[in-house]
Structure formats: structure tokens, C-alpha cells
Amino acid sequence: MMQFLLAVLSGACGAMGMYTLREAQRQAPRSPVPQYAGAAPQSSATRPPGWDRMAPGREAASPTCPRPDAAAPRHAGAGPRYAGNKPSPIAVLLPVPPLLGHPSVQAESGGIGGVTVRAASCRGREHMAEGESRQDAFVVGSSADGRWLIAAVADGVGTTFHAECAAQTAVGTVVREVARLLKGNPAGPRDDDWSAAFGAAADAVKERRADLSAYAGDGRPCSTTLVALVAPVHPGSGDPVYCAGVGDSLAFRLGGRTREWEALLVPDASGTGGISDNVTWALPSGLDHLRTAVVRWERDDVLCLGTDGFTHALGHGSPLRDELAAEWRTPPDIMTFIRDVDYHRATFNDDRTVVGLWPSFHDGRMP
Image (spheres, rainbow, N blue to C red):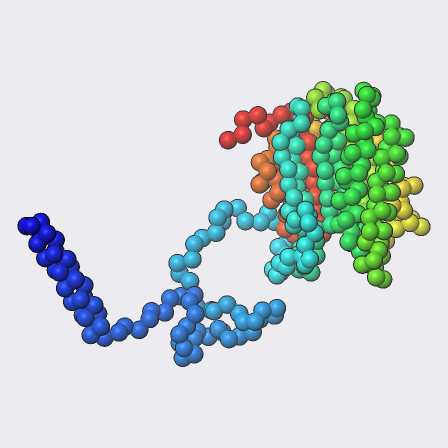
């Protein structure tokens, strides 16, 4: 009985306390709602200057009031890598509609056998500003028997309709075909193997053109440059490396002893006939301009494939040329490699892609 009375008294006291608190809150004067920086103002009288100012492509600009508590961006100390005069700021627009599986940045890193691979492809500033897709592509793979590393890079010709589709199609096809042709072939690809593989890539681009023809309208059908490389996965000093290409995408190397950049496959200047875009030959029409080469992978050489958006930045007098010659003695981590490939320099606005191969395995103990 005593416990029952205590419980009743406790409940009554609690109810009386809640009533007293609510009554005090009801009688107290109401405070105005605080105005936080960056929050929508409660009335037009309190709106900061610029709140209603229209901006291109937007309904209204962001408020101009300061945001003192905004968090600092991550990795703020790194920033872009500048390789000469800084470019003017631009607005970055996403591609609309986006191409499935073709992001603005594509990257890969790791090892194949005894070779360390770094690869990155970045959308250029021109395509960022225009809201267009990255038109470069790369693929890195190996032969079925595990003896050979196969890599390919392509640069879709920018004045053609959906050039990115041609680039994607070309790199995937040539790597698959070379892998098939190398099956049971310990000697590496011959010239006729390259002709067959690049012919298959040209045919695949033609088929892709047919798929896109209903949407192309008056646009030129898609085309692309293509360069490929076959190298041993366990390289010894002086082992052969096989290269082939159509157009101005390059196979090149950073000499282990000289620390100089050297083209392995001299680009073919455009001529008469075929799709050249006033600059370079391209698939499918430029198949007759296939070039091949066999070079030696000397100790500490770094082998590379790249599109002209990167290789043009390695010209004489470029700070990037000398800096990367020193920094790429060993493979950088993948985030640094992306930053290197996506250098910033005024008037250098094209997509850029590089596949780099180091002749030893460096990724066995990644943190």
C-alpha cells in the first residue's frame, strides 16, 4: 500500500513540473529565428547583396555572405600541377547525356608479372567547358599464356560524331585480337599480326559507326587514332618490345641512362585521302598508314603510350619534360600519376592519356 502511494505522489509531482515548464515557456517573449551564414533569409529586408542576382545557367547565384565555418578542402596542399603559364579559370560542365562507362577520369595501377603499370586518362579543359565527353581511351591486358603485356591508347578525332565511341571500340578490339594472335606464339607479334589486329579494330569502328548513324545527322562519322604495344611481363635488359600505330598517338620512352624522352614510333603526318582531320590519320580509313617497330627495353627504361594532349607538353623547353624525367625514375602512386597526366597549362586544352610501364614490380607492399 505504501509503495502504491509513493508511485502516485511521484507521478503527480512529475506532471506538475511539466505543467510549470510549459506555462513558463508560453508566457516568455519569443526570440527571433537566428540568421545563419548561408541559410535562406527570413525576409527580403535581411537578404544579403547578390542573393537575387541571376547567373548564366542558374536560376539565382549563391548568396554572397561569408561562410567562416566552411571546412577546408581535402588535399588542399597539392592542387593542380602547372606546366607553364596558368590557364584562365573555366566552368566545368558534366557531359549530357553521359556515356556509360566513360567517366571524366579513368585510371589504373598495379602489376602484371614483373612490370609496374600506371595508366590515366583525363578529360581536357575544352571538353569540360563544352560539357562534352572525354574522347581518349586506354586498355591494359595480357596474353592468355601470361607471357606478354598488351596495352593500347586511342584518341577519338574531335571533329567526328561520338569520337569517344570509336576510341573505346578500338582499344578494346586491338587488345583482344593481339591476345588471340599471340596464343602459342613465343616470338611476339609479326607485322601481319599487327595488320590483322588493326584491321579488326577498323572493322569494329565501322560497325560502331553504323550503330550511331541514325543519330549522327550531318556530323562526320566517328574515327580515332590508335597505338598499341606488346612487351614481356618479365623483362630482361635488351628484351624486344613491339609497337604499332595509326595516327599521332605515340609510343615513347624515358631512357634509363639518358633520362631523355624518345619516340619509339614516329607519328605519321596526314596526307591526302582518308580521315586526317588536317592533323593525323585515323581509323578506319587510315589503315594503310599503319606503322610498326621493334625496340629494345633497356635497363630502367620507362615505356609509355600517350595521346598528343600529353606528348605535346613534353616539347623542348617545357618544365614538365624535365620534372617528370626526374620524378618518374620510379612509379609514382596513382593519385600523383593522375595529377601529372592532368597537368594545367594555358592553351593546352585537349584530353590527355598515358600508360606507363616500369620494368620491375613496385606494388608488392602497398600500405
